[in-house]
Image (cartoon, rainbow, N blue to C red):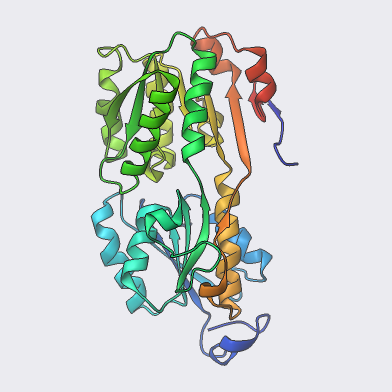
Length: 327
């Protein structure tokens, strides 16, 4: 394997406005997410812990973390957000778009920090990026340009591809943004888009069944967090291989799991950035004056073994572009 990196109440250690509560209990950060609760927390929780550690907070030492997941039933998120408010957590950390919107609707006073895909102003999370002016801030990645680039990369490795399947979660509020971006990319690049839908990991197999019948030459996975769940990720990679359809994903973890290629922002870096804001708020800073951060560390990953299994020849230009190459 060859890897090339794109870019090489409070404890006594924390001060200040909340210190009076330190002698009673550790402060609790409530994590709201769409997936299934796991004993160690949701996928990418390690990146949140890293961001907290950069600001002096260690789980179990001077902060506690409470996780509430919706089991991919996004209509449960408002109820779970309200539960975090009732439990009087110090900060709500909302992992991805639907949880962020639910958290914002649940409280106008409790600090909310998000990690999302898409423009937070357009999503309705903040009024302005540089001065949120309310109780909500966080980190984001702009996805529009990434979608067009993914289609271009598919065309490079599959020049004959004229029909591209686009897998979305129709229950996600992110789907409208995803579809708009994909439709724009398809129009600019001259491909036909076929929308495929799955609302849970168990529906992915049925969603991909029309690939052969509709002569889909290539596949792109939408940005919904459900597809990045480890179980769903493994299912997607296996099904793409069984259908022999070249597929591009939005995170290199898919490529590590055997997928063909990915192009997207390093999502652990995105969550880490947001995690540093959680720490700063625990220290007394106000979300209203913390500018929303944009994660910009983009990675291209390529799996040569998967390309060979699909009978694809990887262009030298694409090989040179890749930051991560799995041989």
